[in-house]
Image (cartoon, rainbow, N blue to C red; front, side, top):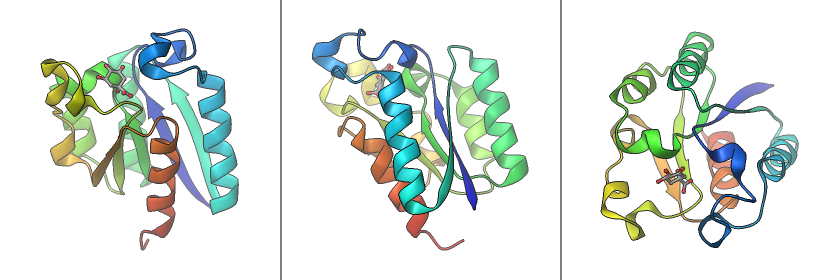
Length: 144
Ligand code: DQA
């Protein structure tokens, strides 16, 4: 079974209580459960992780590159400025899909730049938890 890493950056553990008017009421546990259930339906072994630590996120991207694991990545605020995360994404040896719960293009100016987008296979943004599920579907349908 293909293993997919679903990696989440800073503050996403606070979903549910974090600015619910922006991010909705679903919690990180809801996000994990939705990804795991979609993974089961798609015959993907989904491993959902979250960190507030840039170094830990980079180490997980290295792990994915070493093992050729596809990645669904919500880099959160790192999206907008972390060249270190961008360079770790560029190491990828399998598809990597950038996802966002919200649509950063419709928010503050500083969110309009993604330093990761150019090295991702594609980006899905603005559909809440469904952004992740759509990304998992895209991975399942990619030729391996
Ligand atoms: C986010 C959008 C980012 O701008 C923000 O910093 C986040 C979440 C999203 O999923 O909509 O933390 O990546």
